[in-house]
Length: 91
Image (cartoon, rainbow, N blue to C red; front, side, top):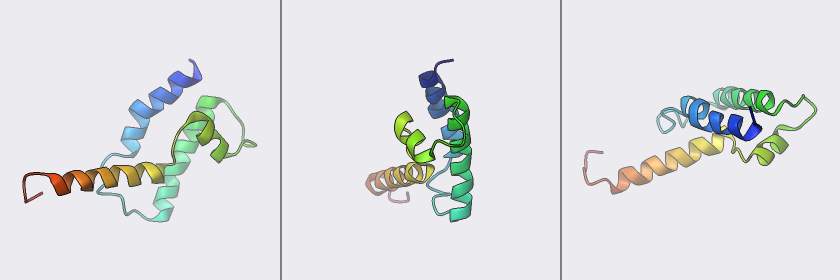
């Protein structure tokens, strides 16, 4: 399978599972966030077929994948912006 297909598979299947309910779990501890980041890093290494000598930052940049922490921040920000403008005052 081509690398771009593996990355698309990650973005469409695996990352939504990792970031499920990100606004609710947006304030998890750094240790828990690091665990989620390790899962993403492991998948990237397997998909790109690279070894330990290549830096994670370079892999993220080359594959155009943001860190899990930035994905959480983006999803939390979007959720709360939608909640502020929602017509129902209870939300």
